[in-house]
Length: 473
Image (cartoon, rainbow, N blue to C red; front, side, top):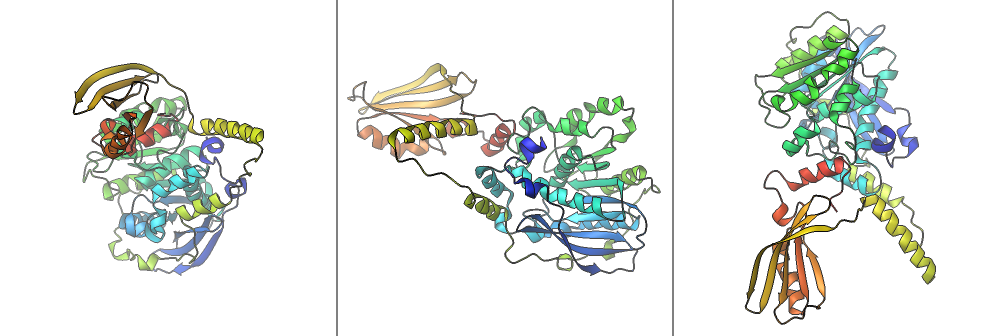
């Protein structure tokens, strides 16, 4: 999965590069911990930031937790719940590394929006690879830290941070204890609630081709894993919708190792919305301290007065720092294409070869029309039309309207018209073609026009299709 999907198209030297972190100073504290500002390189030219929360008395080997962001908007790593988590960890003798995330906080530049990661796919590099490298760099840092006990490494995050947690902790066995919060569901729950995963990194191309997030959860066995979900989540992944597949169905894998107790579930009722508030945080403290062999932490240490402002936690990035879109542009510029042959026979051979490559890229599979059901017709004012429901051999369907002037011969040229907004939006083009004496077949393929679902966006369904390596052609 890592080589074939996550790192597809990524330079090996980038993937295998050692972590590059710059220490930019300490924010001192007399309250039992300190904060260290860090800047780190994800790939050449693209830097991110982090805050390391250190116990004041840092001697010997201690546990460490990688704390990753969800959709924290402008606050990013400075969001209050994340500060409270990391301060509480540090006060209990745990190193906590809080990472920034694309699109938020110090990385909130417009070109760092997650949707721009689709441009990475276009230049041949899996969008998921960038997100994976960004979080793995943090794990690499903790793993190499001289005071970290490598057998007691944890990871946690809310929402997109919960998604990051299950992906990295399943695929990298260095993460011994994981607490993902409201970050993912099974393929089946996503099909019923497609808006739950509306981000390109969560529905990365091919990522669920033959496997699912249920597989990643099972891959955590027998390592301690606590799944936290919210009863009335107002964002995504409500606990009643996901529990059966990602918890009940996975318990037998932990039972095989006789580690049933190492796999736990916590449902938040108060407030029950999309959150990592005190009830959920206290569940994480109990779980981490238990499996890090530390004194059990039943309650959160009150630290409201210790919360820093966004500006206080700013680390700073290079002025010429790349963005997600900027990285895609850079990679596109490095693509080398051979010149098109000038000789006719060589050009034909080249064209055939390129078509075969294109078929592979788009996974083209020829299909046939199994049934063309005539649903309606018109014949007046000089025009005739037939409305169809088309059923294809790949079990997909489409709607179409055939239009021609009554006086046009049956052997008149035929033009197929497609429009992203649907065939109704193609009226001007259809009219122009018909006025030339042509026949026109205006078609609404999957996710366009008549076949567009009312809720949610058709893009959410399209992401799922690409995620399971299917084609709608």
